[in-house]
Amino acid sequence: MKVKIGLQLYTLRDETAKDFTGTLRQVAEMGYEGVEFAGYGNASAEEMRDLLNEIGLAAFGSHVSLQRLEENLDEEIAYLKTVGAKYVICPYLTAEHLAGGEAFWRELFVKFKGIGERLRAEGLEFAYHNHAFEFESKIDGEFVFDAMYSAVDADLLKVEIDLGWVQYAGQDPLAYIAKYAGRLPLLHLKDFRQGKPGEAIDTVELGQGDLALNELIAAAEKAQVEWLIVEQDRCANPPLASVQTSINWLKANGHKA
Image (cartoon, rainbow, N blue to C red; front, side, top):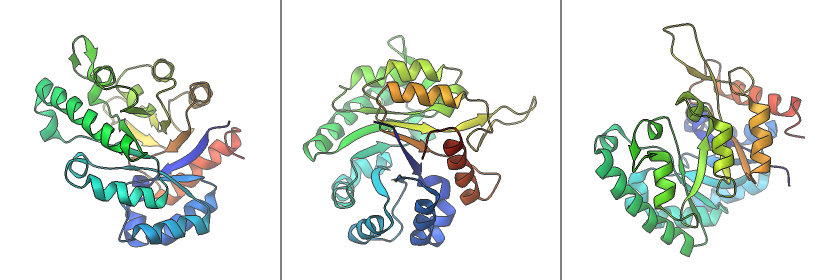
């Protein structure tokens, strides 16, 4: 089955803050098939469910901060079950967390097992979304990224690889897709472009950067990825125009009808 195309709504955080409903309508009109939440505005779960059903968008998952996973997990479970989402994803860790070093990571792996068990009991699945810092240190000879998935069973923690950050960290995105095939339902499509010496690397619209996206998408389909998720951390152009450009690239390259 052809992989589906979703959008991480963090890209449109300023737009959803002003008009969540109107922004979702525009996302649906562009041709995105589903959304991954990064907050829900002020909409109740029932209101969100009804809106998504009306405009034909699937709610497949949500980025939920570690603090909310620890303190408000029951609320998240209830909301996501109401809107029909399947995946709960830990999206980032703070500098304060990371200052704890190896001890923090080992404690986090144990915590993730408990969260994964709770979500599995509710019919949901838990996943983790990487940045670059998971490739900057090792535990037991493995990058933290890999040590996490060695420590937590596959039925308790799925992989949401962010391809842009993997390449930014100096790793091979194709190799990582292959390594986690079968455990990788969610894949963030994020293009990076290397600037001139001394310039920051930044996220750009799909097809405007350095990633071999067509190869990566072909590998994702072989790896049984369910959702390819467009995300752009920062947009030089208006964010709605940026996500339109990205889905236009996907359509032009045969990845979306």
